[in-house]
Length: 112
Image (cartoon, rainbow, N blue to C red; front, side, top):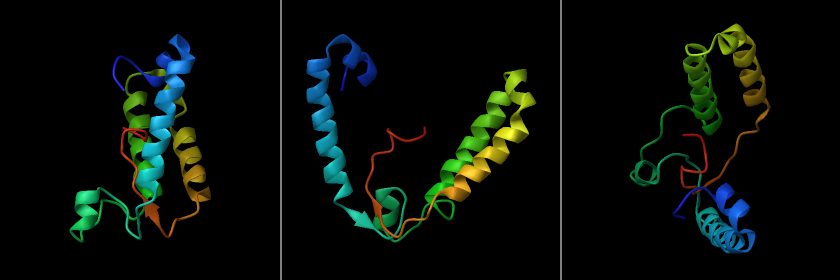
């Protein structure tokens, strides 16, 4: 989609944005139809490699912890709750059940 975010498109022209949402849904269904026992970048998994980390949950949790640390360096309010945020992230990550199969998902909808 060009010309801004999907959120902006929904606010500007909901009918036109619904068509974009439909195409996005089709793309996700097509990606989801391809599964693997491994997770990671397609090029890495297809060649027998494995991604960094032991699970998707670990990768996302570790990235979130780095983001909290980076934000804490910029904002004293975040620095004041850094440990609480890290503990909460740990609890949330622990509640996620591991998957035995992974579907293809383009990285853009997830954490950057």
